[in-house]
Length: 345
Image (spheres, rainbow, N blue to C red):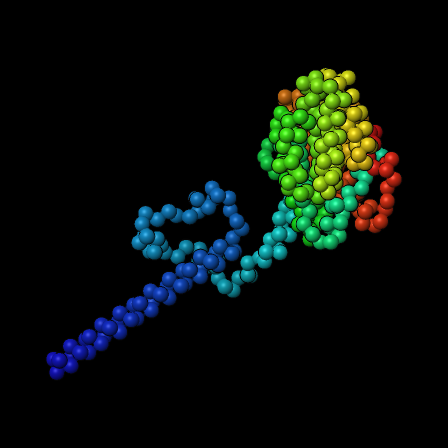
């Protein structure tokens, strides 16, 4: 009898061990399921938020013994399922649109007198969009392109432009690469034209140039010759081109003669090479002279660089022109060569 009792004890102990293992595995699986569900149900936080929200265990043992969250009811399977990737993408587009609208709530971004003008023909961009292929745009330039004066990276003009184009073409894969380096002008940019632009094989190059040449008292004619050579190289590589001339700001227009010559010379290059030009100098001057905006409402305290509003309105008007030009190609409008530039107002 004692032997039978001990045998039953052994069987009971073995059964208990098996049961304990099953329970442990079940609890572990439940915790893993809760963790996965929580990750899918929560919008992606910033790195700082993730660091604060995730407890750091002192040892592997401590991690395995972490209890279920107190608000585990939030992970109830009966609640609506997490958003799909498509729904999340739509939410991001809506948020970007709200961000773009918010900055114009106090001071609206008004198109130049006469409305948006055409940048001319952008066949490579239009062709890629029509074919449903990815579109790559390079913003090439100096500190205005890099975004000096903006309060955050998302408020630079290339990022503002990217957001606008993605709202306009939600099904398209559009990327805008910021290739701006502060302090450069045509001579320095030409040294990296091959690696920063041509080797990337962009569909469109937006080349902002001329401001630093004015500040350095460089000959506008010499700058224009360098830019013309650069535009020819970009076109030969199979990309559309849009030039952007200097900004209208105190440190630029205090050298009025040089600035005016630079604006004229870049417009002439655009006409000779049959590329678009966005007349930033005239557009910004209209903000001040015709729309009565104080200069410090679109230029920061250094008297040179744009602020968040200035970059946002610049990007908005440039984006409107790009969208209009692409639309003309898509509906078969052929613009004569002599009007393929955005004429100064």
